[in-house]
Amino acid sequence: MFLAVAAPAEAAVFAFRNDGWIHFVVEGQNLARGPLGVLLYVLFVPLYGYVPQAHRASYLSITSLLLALGTVGPGYTATLAILALFSLGIVRQFGTPSKRWSGTALLALVYSALLVHPQPPWLPAIHTPEPLYFYLHWAGIGYLFLRTYHVLADVALGRLEQPGLANFSAYLLFAPTLRMGPIYRYRAFAEQLADGPAQHRNLLSAFGRLVTGLVRLGVLGIVLKELPLDRLFHEPQTLSTGQLIFGLYWAPMSFYLWVSGYVDLSIAVGKVLGFTIPDNFAYPWKATNIAEFWQRWHITLSEWLRDYLFLQMIRKRWPVAVSYVSTFLFCGLWHAPIRCYLLWGLTQGVGLAIRRMWLDYWKHQRNAKSPKYQILARARLVDSPLSAGIGWLVTFHYLMFTLTIGVDVAHAGLRFFRQLYVVVGIG
Image 1: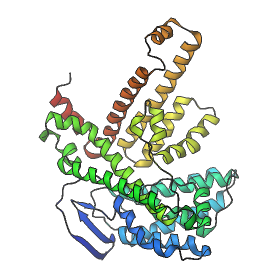
Image 2: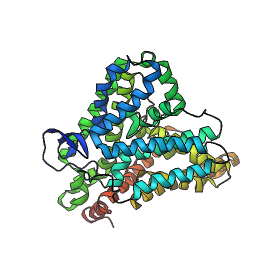
Image 3: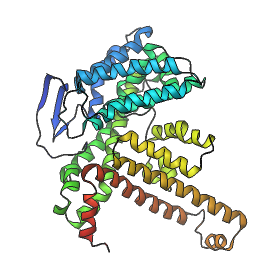
Image 4: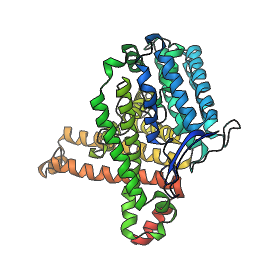
């Protein structure tokens, strides 16, 4: 999968191939396609300051497509450009309250058809361990859908004016956030675009985020050399008990380092360019409950899910538990159209629903001053550092387990957990 490290190192290659022109492969990973690839956009930054304001949006669109051309090839680049035009057409034609849901259905149909197709004929085979649908998602297709729906919904509800072609294309294709977010809101992006590069440029802060991102990705690379995820999930029988238990925690941490490292680099490039890209992580492992975790983890995605799915269901008087589960089943499906991500989404939705029911139960106990509540209060197990510590411990291990399930099933169909069961001798 995307974090596998198994192949020997290869030299950098510049070749006009149909799957990209820039290929810098290290330990089986094409760095130009991964998080480090976003740094290539720095090549286009110096000229941006000299572009007249009327042409800045077009410059961002064209240079973002040029970066895609160099890293994922002409087929994928053309697909992104066509989808941007199609998405604008959807917003223009269906951006009214009466047509919004028709536009949403058409938008979802086109994007999902592309992702579930085993091999669209105009796209070349890719030299990567991921399946094509997964690679398409990380190449930006998934985020184009979320951004487009955000604009469609807000235009239909009167929160936004109809966007112009130049600004909308720049927003969708903006290279620093195209592949893995964060999910900019259109209004913030358009305002910063209009302000110009000088107002939001911060080179010192950019350097700090650059160093942080490189450190995170460096730690990831060092540990992956010692314990590659391919070995962890495909050959768990070759690992010791300690390595298997370490793997239970390492798999989700590796995903965190990979994505948060990318976000750091994305924000750094944005600050040099003159954009304040929203942050996506706020120390998620400090969370003392699963709801707080989702306020700290992939923040812009969490806010999108809250605003455009969960709250819409609540307003329609769906049961809270059903709303949580439905929201995160969509979240799992959005990550990839396979069962492992639906299973992962289900665990997150169920966890949030259980927490909500638990809160409601203890709120009733507290208001009623029940004997049970008074006993726990006297034992300092309510609203105390001890209760917060217990909450953190439960939350941390629940997330470690469920995130590892998602990564494991995607790799090897729970082979890691079966081997952990055998080696540790559970039961």
